[in-house]
Length: 343
Image 1 (cartoon, rainbow, N blue to C red):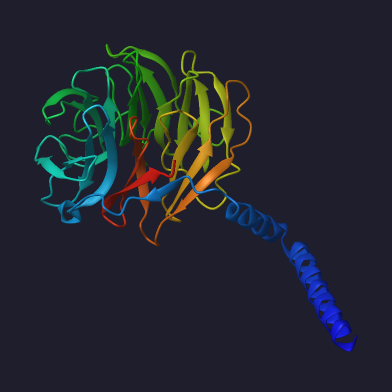
Image 2 (cartoon, rainbow, N blue to C red):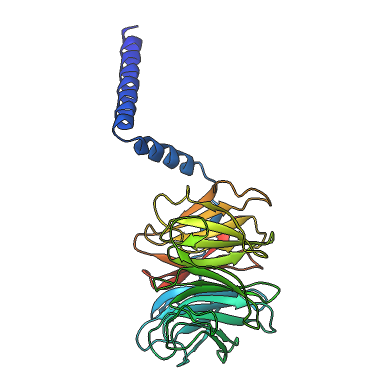
């Protein structure tokens, strides 16, 4: 009996101290409890993806900082945009991990975002150039072999004009099935805007004010379009994702509750459009968010999390529409990593 009494009193004492500690933390800062709760529920998340340690087969081909990645799932090719002195600006790998070659083009200064355009056969690529030289402040279209096809913007000159079209450090572009182009401009320059233009360069609509209000931006960094005609934008410095109607440009809502720890840097959808893949650079983390059905945007919900090593610094991501694999361009680690679904 004495032993049972001692055990009971010990457990009771621990519970009392724990409760007092929690209430003490709550009185100091209610965010502490919120942090405990968030950590607890994140620990219950079901992992959806795991690292493919065999991709690529030989990592020494990464010679610069990997800023962006684009996957051509129809041909099984992975394009990596990198920066650095005397390094090829675009590397090409297979989805199986083999190195296939590089573009040593002189028409690309400082690539930022790279996006596949499936409206051409074979698909072409749009690359944003944030350089300050003769080729910068532009959005460029390249063939799959690295041939420059088209240039949007005024090369070498930053600006905000819509006619002629000008950019200042454009962050990323996305091309939909109708060949309309969505551009987030810019990555720290004079502009903070989202544009939708046709392939003939007609501006259909734009949001272009810096600020914290709905439809305003502070470093719009990544953009994508889902199957419900919604445009999703990673509004980086405002630490939120905003959604718009792709046809009218109407603001539909925003998510900020998932980004208390760090800003969203990327927005890409899985092949089934059920999840959104978001990189958080400063805490080296990938969030997998549930995409809401058509209707109210609501709050964002974390379905799963991929925690990377410290200082990996994931920047932009892409997803294979065939295998659903996630490819993460990492500035800190100077590489791209591949994550595959558990299913």
